[in-house]
Image (tube, rainbow, N blue to C red; front, side, top):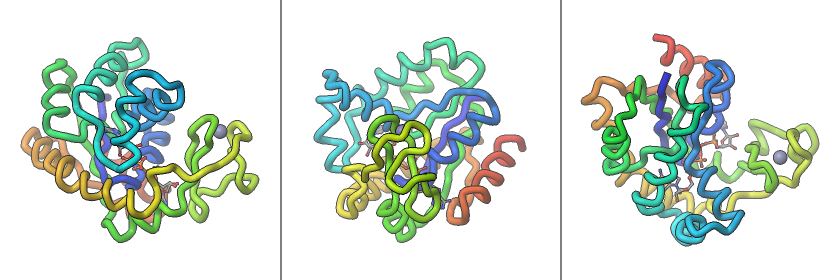
Length: 210
Ligand code: AP5
Ligand code: ZN
């Protein structure tokens, strides 16, 4: 099954990708994580993306399209994948179609803006392995420490309220038009993402199996 998770920043795409991937045994492909990794290891692509990411803007299409194209050619994508955070613009969706990749379903996790800003202020991520937590909704076993690798939990630099607002603006102007794009292809399913993580997982898995 080839899936796309669509939704505002902080809607819960990464969280739900984890559940879907564990259940269907397919990889999650998060362009956000891939860009953060590139930034950490100081690659040319990471350096190109840095200023965009830090100000909450989208990274240029050609940069992201290139990394997704390479990633989808790897062996572990043969039985399916979940795209988390890609495509995010119409040109990215068109590029994906041109790659000849057949998408089965596009699931939009819907959360209104006012809930997003509050949710993002509580997110903490592991600075070593990138695992994601929440101060209220997904607490680590030991405060401030990653339950996977023991690394220190920090706030993402783009999770400060001003940057979150910039990311929401980018989402509404550049990414939301994808809903109509995939609705026209008969692939869009909208899932409510405001309730607890487990409720959203139940709705998301039901949408995939329908
Ligand atoms: P990216 O890393 O993709 O960020 P995003 O889309 O803004 O999404 P997030 O990772 O912030 O949120 P999420 O929806 O995955 O939510 P999560 O599950 O973590 O991208 C970052 C940047 O990279 C972009 O701004 C851009 O610059 C660049 N980029 C990436 N892809 C690109 C592309 N294709 N084109 C161009 N540029 C690109 O949940 C959030 C928090 O809420 C967590 O703490 C979680 O524990 C908690 N939570 C989740 N679900 C619930 C729930 N139901 N109830 C309560 N808390 C919950
Ligand atoms: Zn960790």
